[in-house]
Length: 261
Picture: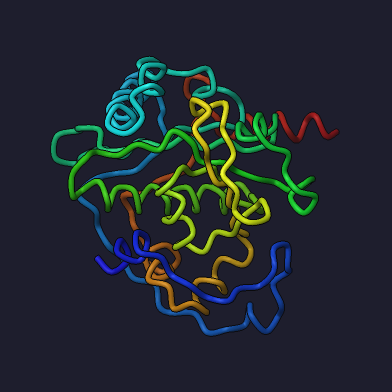
C-alpha cells in the first residue's frame, strides 16, 4: 500500500510553525467524498479482562522481538492500562479472534503524560490537552503493517472524539521516522533523543502533531494517509468508550465535569 510505504520511507513538506492556528482560508478548502472500506480485522477499545489479556499477549510478543529487556516487564497488565484517562486498543482478527495489535492511549486529563517522567514539555504544549500513544505492538508479518496504520487512525479518531489538541509520542530509532513521515514535528530543538524511564531508559525522540491542523496539513501535503484516516469510513474501527470494569468511558468525562463545578 502507498500509505504504508509513505509511513516507512518518509514524506517531506513545509508546514506551519508549532502552535499555529488554523485559518479560515485553510478550513474552507474543498473536502473529498467519503468512502467506505472493510478491514480483515477490528480495532476497538478493550472492554473487559479477556480483551486486556489479548492486548497484553500481543504487546509482550511484539516487545520481545525488538526490546527483550522491556518485554520482561510486560508479561502482565500494567496499572496504567485501567487508570482514568487511559484506554487500551485491541486489533483482533475477524476470522478467529486472534490478537493482531495493541496500543495504549493516555490523555493528560488526570495526570501528566508518561513521557513527562523523562522530559519537561515546552511552553507551547503547557496547558494544552494532549494524548500520548504508548505500548504499541503488532503481529510480526505483512499484516502487521496495515494493523499499525489502523491503530494510528484509531488513535487519531480517539483524540478527535475526546477533543484533544495535541498528539504527543516518544519513539525510538528507527520508529521515529514513521512519525516524521506522518508529519509529526519535534518537541525538543534538534530532534534530540532522550532516555525514557518508562521504556528501559532507551533513547527516544519526542514528537507532536496538532489535531486542529491535521486535515489541512495532510491535504496540503497530498499525503496518502489523508484519504485513509479522514475520508475513508472504516466500520471495523470503533473507539467509542465503555463503562465496563472501570475502563475509561463516559463516566470519566462526567467526573471531570463534576470536578470543574
